[in-house]
Length: 264
Length: 313
Image (tube, rainbow over all chains, first blue to last red; front, side, top):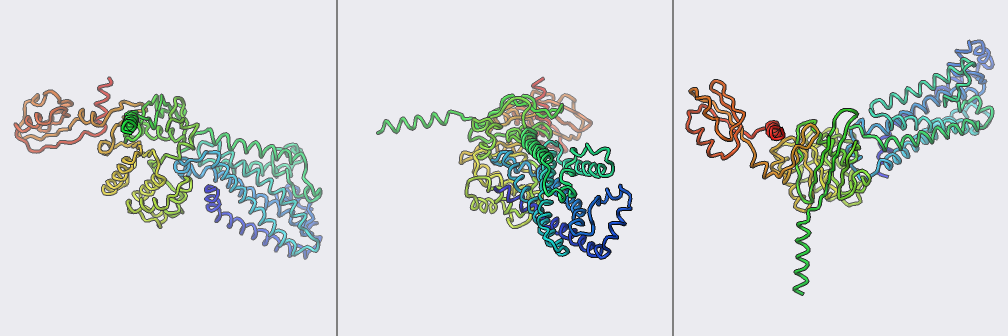
């Protein structure tokens, strides 16, 4: 419990800054929507004439930008990028920082097992990403609802559900890499590198339909706003795949961290 | 009635003679990849003793200690603390261990008192009173941020942190670096007081004089191997003195080539050598010549090691 509280305290500031950032991102984007919606359908027509690769990079795809939720669907891709960067960094740092900041000799000389320390740290990370997700949900609903006549909480909740699974996956990518990595300084950069590669892959798939089969390799494709908003449901294959990835990474985090020498 | 008491006393003294090993290290070997950490290290630390662990930097002192605390795992061999395997029962044995690492790094943004409370929260003991007691002895300001502390003050935080839960075994890794002589004295007094209560201390250092002052027995480690485990009293007997003499007139080269003198170097008017034996006889010899200057020093650790090397070879 003491390690959990310590981690909550030490991550508090950064979490607050992230939450303010995410609120501002949504607020400013929806502010732009106000201007955009005045032009009505002409925006959709204009964007439809843009090259497909441009649309893919911007994440526009097939969204109807004239509706608030369609516009939000594009914004969601950016929210996901922020949420996963936060989760990855959090996961990599929370595990590797004791070694990086040389507090490992203090903490691990205490009468607690490594497993218990990992559990406390994972629990603290879990609460952190949950708060992140909840703040995004509340701000999104509040800010998007301003422009919409229909209730949109259902749409946003399902998107946030997808985002949370993504957050979990990237959190554990961070912790697993930090647990395996013998040099704690490399863990955060390796994790964000992994994030970047999977994100680029998801953009590449949008741009080029010939490599669509690769979509299973990048979690960013698992919870695509277009599909979520259309189906209003999660794809079972992706859900199972996510569960497998999360449990494998979870296991790796414990097993590797327990077995290796601490970097002191 | 009388009889029963006698029997009890008998049992008691038997217990006293039975040396309980608090630490038992058996053929402990640690390689970092191909790089040597320690090779085949074995020694025991008995209950209630202050055991010195001495060797130059990089000899493997910290490696041994970190293995005892299961911060790192041995390549082969094993170690027991309180009779229990130090890795398998790591969390359990660490309840009664206080550890002061050689380099102190703490969560920078914390205040001293918060760190100490955090440290105390790992032990199921009430230790707030003890924290204030120790801080007073060590003259440590509890309300400062750790970030703002000097090296010596950080070391004090480490000392309080290591002692606040009143452990039965204290492991110190080069604890005196950064402490001024006055603080060092207070710290040693503190350790001796703990030791009197029955606490066992493993004291690692590269400074021979402090180990000599404090310890009952000592293990000497060099390049990952234990060179010798010896009582300090025995070590003192075999101790060398380093002589350096400046003379006015040139002297016959072999004037000091007597029993007990080694490493004799005569360079113009400077003579230096190591001496081991009765101090009176060498002083007599020195007094017979005209001196300009004289230095008598404790040989440094390296020279002691040289001595052990020669013996080994």
